[in-house]
Structure formats: structure tokens, C-alpha cells
Length: 390
Image (cartoon, rainbow, N blue to C red; front, side, top):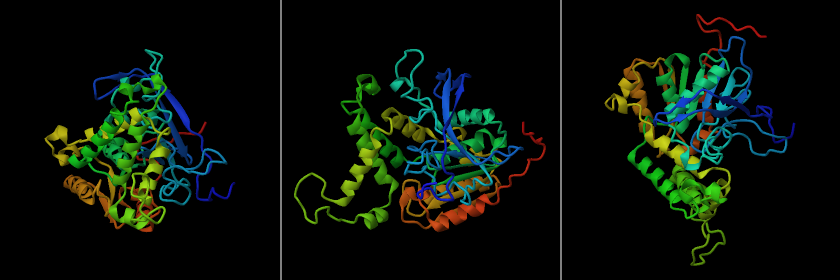
């Protein structure tokens, strides 16, 4: 094994794809007649199939949560810090599944996929999907894998919203819910940030009303701006100050509009690396899914009532410097869960990295995460017959 692949990595992984012919009715009123879901799995599913863990990804994430796709691959999955042998999500104990959400651009059916009715990319014709739609599609994936109940469903940010929706929609199919750096709904400020990002994309002259692929173009300018804006919100003022301060690239002011400060260089690098890897229509869809998520809305804005049928045990984690999904939002969720007499563990981690702290190897965070995961039993559930190996 190459030196850059450590012993606590899941190593080389190969994505799998499942095609679903059963139509999926969406909350928008549209129906997907058929669709694909791409996913990765790590570890081994037990004979009783009770050790399965579902990972839900955030806005710009995908199915590649851990490991490497080839010996030459230098970049591991996005949650390599948390998934692998001996890590909090221990693949020696658990069978871990991470799908690419519907509407994504990494293998699951989405705007870049071919619309069977036209033979052209869906583009803007791909219907808006919600967190609830993702959870329904993930439940079908679980059915295909023979998983009746998840030992835990885990996610951060937009992934944490999916975890919460899982506990509401399928209360008997989730034993533990681990919600990290998330909220039960976006604040108005968060919706505003998302709208600015969408406008940057939609007003790009190369957007072509979302049909840029048919014109052999990409709305690069808009996507770059959206990524730069988003990335600023994922970091804290303290982390940006510590990393860049007011450092000048050339050690002097040039009195112009080209890159002068190191932070400008960093944002442009992040933007450039995003273009070509992430689809603009997918970015629009994902931010709308964020905006729409609000389980309390159907219950008179009473979150406690929305959670009334929930039975899972919860672990909620927030970070002190996360101003986009602040600890107060997590505390609001914890209060609503406790109002329903649910088993809840809450940790507020002191960290300067901002919203992106959930991706970082912060010892206190990983220790708490690891300790909670060790509570999860992988024994056969009561009343669930063992499944013999064929």
C-alpha cells in the first residue's frame, strides 16, 4: 500500500450504482419515473444486518466519504478523519453506506443526466428535490441492501438535516441519530446567502437558462462567485485571520485589482478548483433543498410537535465559531427533543475553524464522537430474525 494511504484508512474503494425503476413521487408534485443512486460502502454487513450506518453528505459533498479510488489518488474521501478502522465510525464494527444524493453531479441521477424523454441532459428540467425526497430514496436504497434498520444515521450541515428527517419519516428504521453542525431550519440570513449564490450563477451570460451543457458551455464566472461566497461562510473570522491575516503575496501594495492579499488568492484557488467538478444546476438544487427544510412548518412552527413520533437516540454536536449553523440552533433542537422525553447527548465543541470544523481532526470533537459511537450496539435487534449467509 502506498505510504500516503494510512493503516486506519479503508483503503481502495469502488463506487456502486443501483438503478430504480419504481417511480419516485417528489414533494414538488413531480415524479421521477426511474433513477440511479451511486454509493460507496465500507466495512462488512453482519449476517444479522444490524451494524449498518448511513452517512448523509452536505451541499458540495458526495458518496466518496472515505478511502481512495486508486493507488495514485492523493485525495481521500471528504470524511477521512471520521471513517475507518479505529476511527469514530469504525469500519471494523460497522458497515457504512454513503450515497450521492438525487440531483447530484457525481453519478446519481441529476441535472447532468440524460432525460429519457428528450435524449438531452435534464438541465433545468430536473425537478427540485427536498430533504424529504432524499430520505425516501435512501430508504429504498436500504431496502435494496437488505437493511431494515440503521444502527445510526449520521450527517453534518445539510447532511444533519437529512438525519433529522430520517428520524421523523422512518422512526422505526433508525436507532441513533447523529446531527453535527446543523439546524432544524435556515435563518433568513442563511437563505439570503444562498440567494446571492444562486443569482451569481443564474445571471452568468453562459448560464443559458440552465441549458449551458447543450451550448457546450459552463457558467464558470457565476459558479466561481457562488463558491467564493459559500466558502467565506464556512470559515470563521478567527480561522481566516489566523491562516491569512492581512498578508500580502508580494509583500507590498500594488494599488490595483489583481490578487494582492493571500486570502484573495486562497478564495480564487477554491473557486477555480470547484469549476468543472460541480454542476451549476446541482448547486441551485442543493441550496433550495437547504432553504426549504423546515419540519416544524407543517406543525404550526412547533418543532416539538414535529418530533413527537421520533424514537431514535440523539447525539447533537455544534462548534462555538460556527456562525452559519450556530450552537443556538443546535440547542433549539436539543430542547425540542428533550420536550419529547428523548434520549439526547449534546456537545458544544470549542473550535476556531467555523462551520467546516466538522471536517477537521479536532481531538476533543473526535473523542466525543468516538465515545458516542461506542454506545451503539451491533447485536441482533429484538424480534428481527438472523439472516443466514448464502
